Length: 507
Ligand code: SIN
Image (tube, rainbow, N blue to C red; front, side, top):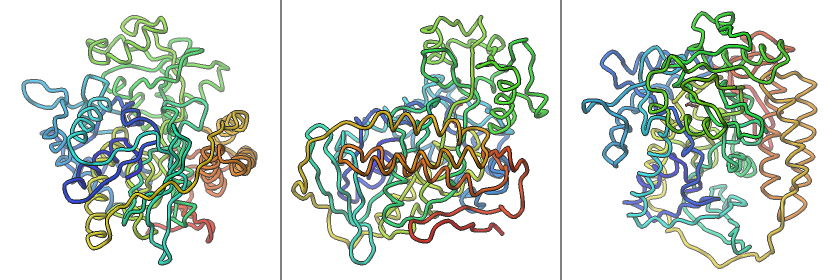
C-alpha cells in the first residue's frame, strides 16, 4: 500500500485481517491530503434523495465523460461505506441522532455528511489511523517510493523506496501493490493542497507502462483565501451551500451572469466566472460574503480560525477569495476493481482515473470515491494474490547520501503551470509549460536528490501534453483557442509510455 490518505487507510484496514500489509507513506501517517478535506462526503442518505438522483447530478457535472458503470458503483455503494465509517468510530455531525446533510454546488439535494463542522477529513483520518494502530499493518513513514518493480511476466512485484531520514534505499517485494498516493495540485503555486501533493503515483505507474487517463482535467476550486502572504486556504463550497454569496469589488453578485444557479453552479462554471471577473477588473480577488450563514463560526470553525489569524472576522467581514488548483481528476487508469493496466498494480483515490468524475468532479464525490474504490481495490488485490508469496523485506540495495532538490527548477515549473496550464489555457501557453516541465524532468533525472522533481515534472508534463491535445473546452479544461465542446473529443485521452496518446471514444 503506498499512501496514507483516506483511500490508502481504508484499503489497508480492509486488507489487514486477511493479508500481511505494509503501508508506506512519504511523510508521517497523519499528514495526508485527505486530512485537509473540509466539506464532506456525498452520499444519497436523505429521505428525499436516491442513488439515481446522485447519479444524475454526478454525470451532469462530468460533462459527458463520466463512465456510467463506475458512477453507478460509486452512488450505490456509497451509503454502505459511510455506515462502515460510523461503525469504525467516525463522529459525523448529527442532530437528534440523524446525520446532518449539507448542500453543495451542483448537487440537487442536501447529501454531504460532514464532521467537526468543516473538519471532515481530519475526523475521518483520525478515526482510521486509530483503528489502523490496532492492526498488525506495518507502517513505514517518511518512505519515498522511487520505483515500482515489475517481474519478467510484466507483473508489478513490489517497490524500491527511499528512507528519507537515513538516506538509504530499500526494497519491498509484494504480490500486489496498491497506489493511493493522492493528487498533484500542489504543483501549481496557488493551491489548496499540502506540500505532499506532487503527483508521484502517476509518474511511478507511467514509468512501468500503466495507462494514464484524463490528465488534462485539473479542477480549480473557486474559493480559496486570497490574502497576501497567507496560504491559499480552502474556503469550503459548503459555505455557499449554506448561503454565502460571491461579490465583486463593487458588491455585485456577478455569478448569475454566467449561470442561473449563481453560487450553486458547478465548480467549473464558478471558477471560470471568477477568473473572467478578475481579468476584466484587473483585481487579484473577489469576495465571499458569509453574513447570511447561520452560526458561521461554529458551523465552520477551521475557516473561522484561519481567517481570524489573518485579521478577518467571517461573520462580519468580506473574505477575499480567488481560485486555486485543488484536484487532479486524471490519473492512473483503473477499472471497477481498482485494477490498472499493469497486472498486480492497483490504484484508488485521487491518483486513479476510475471514470467517476468525467470532465468535472462534483463536490464531495472525491472522499466517496476513495472509500468505495479503496474498498474494492483491497478486495480484488486480496483475491488476485491469494496464491501469491508473502511480502518480504530485503536488505538495502543502495546507500546514497540524500541531497537537496533543485528549488529553481521547482519554482520555474510551478510558475509555468499557473501561466500555461491554469484555469484558461491555449496551445502556446501549454506548449511553453510543457517545455519547462520536460526540462525539469531531465534536470531531476540527473541526480539522486532530484527524483521527486523528476516524478513531479513527469506528471506535470502529462497534464500539459493532454491539455494541449484536447482541442476543445469541456468541464474544467478550458481552452481560449477552442472555446466549445466538440463531439470529436467525446472520450478519454489515454496516455502510455510506449504507445503515446490516443482518444478512447465514449459510445
Ligand atoms: C470543499 O469543501 O469545498 C471541497 C470539497 C471538494 O473538493 O469536494
